[in-house]
Image (cartoon, rainbow, N blue to C red):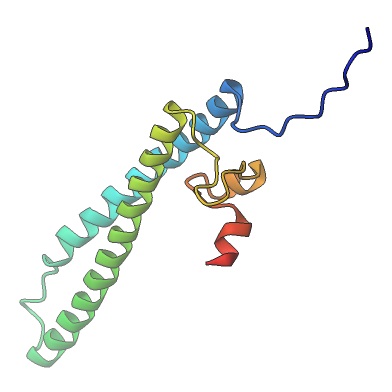
Length: 131
């Protein structure tokens, strides 16, 4: 009997070992992201307690404007950080579902290099460039 040559099958998902590697990477990033978020939140909460009671009225207005701008910037950073945390948590769910690393547009595997840089990616570069 003649043996049939098998065509190499394109991988449709990452192996459990590969998923575990990504999970560890994401957990590290998640821990740092949560720490950064808490720091930003503390900065926002404490920025209103800058004591300017004993300074001149004109300086106080400048100080309050500066503090207000800093608080606004910290709020924007905190919002971005919160979204990043949500994206990382969603990536962990995809790992549990074994759908992690699969482009949601093309259905192909997202290259490991991209996932190491952007572990919450759901699009391949090809799909992202088409948008």
